[in-house]
Length: 299
Image (cartoon, rainbow, N blue to C red; front, side, top):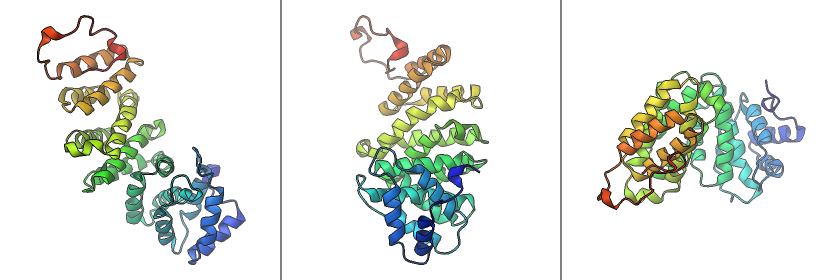
């Protein structure tokens, strides 16, 4: 067991946790905020992981405590923003022990889509740690697929954006058993982004989803287990892509892939170019366009 998964070392924190589980949580919140290293670019993830390990098999009012910490609305530039970060690791700890499964997934969905950057960083860490375990990457994808049905548009986009980013981690990709489920999920995320109403184009969650896709797809295609299947899947996505935002995202993926396999990237670039809408007047194409294909976007 990794050191960060051994639970809390501080006697003061453990005593405060006992008090919190008995209904007196003020001292625990004060200690977590004091030692959470917030506000800063790097929250104390070791503490959050130890907190999650400590709560994994605890008895008592664990779900109520984690729900309270998850619901904290402190600003991102305060020390208290660490509380939902700790909660995210607490929920994944409960999932590992098959405890409070339904409330854990529900809380994590909201934490994934949280508008505060530090909370998303902490939730990303918690989900990567969980999904890197045997069998959990597939379970995460199954759950995330259900989240795509969310009627709340910002919540749906936000949760998908963070899950897709989790899938960019090499440890998570190497542990996947069902690659077809992964490709099906990514296709659904692309469709959700591309088929969104025009009013959604200003959505921060949708923007983050596009950014996460551009980060993750090249890694998925390059993963050893994906192999030729990943290349074929991405080629099919390039062929059917219509929305300009999706096409730009796919073009960015191809540019990233060009540094790994120029031949594969060139084939994908040709497919994406062929699926583009024809220019209104080809005679107006400026002389010199088409140069430097490997480092520029495809229309």
